[in-house]
Length: 395
Image (cartoon, rainbow, N blue to C red; front, side, top):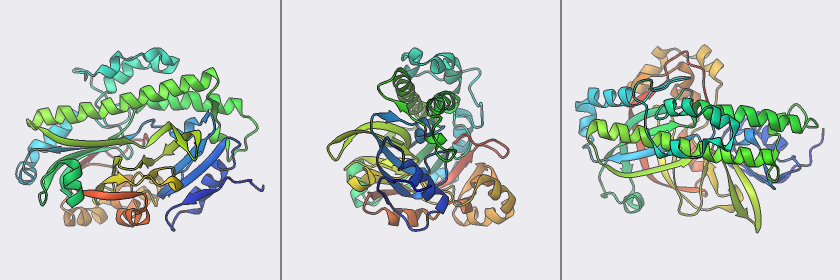
């Protein structure tokens, strides 16, 4: 079938054909206005991970993603970096006590408290039904690509000024990656099925790109639920960082965070549109963001350049080069441990589907998007925890 594809721009030269095909299908939708494909792109449901799609008065649940408002947060502490090596058990205990990992992970005895639980959870029957579950999971980290880790932050000369840190100094920092947990997944499941039921005309290739009209009740309901999940995901990270800082008796000097599975109302080329960033970081001019690599490669704090060709977006990470199933068949921990030791990384838990070798070179990804963001600080992981092996991925 010959598709009438809305023009889109692509960053990176080593993108797999399947993710490019997914982007082309998305850009052939009648509601699509513009698109962009980031250098970390890989295959997803409907829109590829790393896909950015602007639509006219329509929201696509699967173009937001299963883990609505998946988010990264970095906090810089006032603790000397030397303590991370000399008192590793203290930091290990802080992670293992103050958050939870895995599908359904929650706090059963001492639930976290946050003002987000006082929001209106009746905006959707899905959020209303899952409010208690969401409260129990507040402050947890989930599975898949999600992690909590300590490491060393090195700001550049620009980063020192922008972040208000001392030049020529390294800092101990905490980095977390998680989203809206089980409730966000339920919201996606419900509204994506609803959208697909409204668009039986879509081909099998395009069915996960079914949309909801923003003028309709269903579209408005999903939009309200999505935004609540955005507030919830932000609160989730706030609880993790506050609890760990309190556990360590630390003061937070500065924090940087951003969503990368979300949709925003924005104006581009004189037109009001809905911009979906599925595994893509907002990169408005001057906006700060966080782009992680892997458990053994750097993460970068970035400042957006506001490039309109990318719909003011950038990559959200290194991007996978291998499926989870293939990774489990390919690697054994004895192949991975030498690299972790070389990089000075202590791994508390993770599955083989998250080893460094399943990701692209983060520095190559950053080089491919130098016109989209400016790296202003580098974070190197040292103590990493992810969901243990055997957990189904939530992302």
